[in-house]
Image (cartoon, rainbow, N blue to C red; front, side):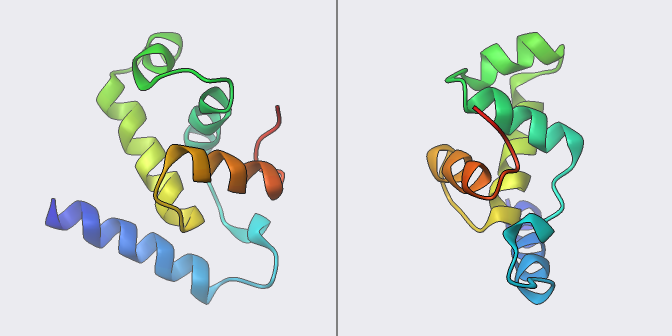
Length: 90
């Protein structure tokens, strides 16, 4: 757990340090973006995992990284922030 918290802290810190007034500057990986896109449609981690042919744990990992980069703590906040900054679409 300590390493995961440290990783999330680093992502959040880097997002703040490199923040240029445009949240789009946050660099999500293609897989993080894809997972957030599926979350925006209402799918669970297990449902996303089935579509991407990965484990639910892998989906959770990508979403946790995306949330840390976006500076949010919930899936709903992540989707709202990603939508607001045009990182995903409905």
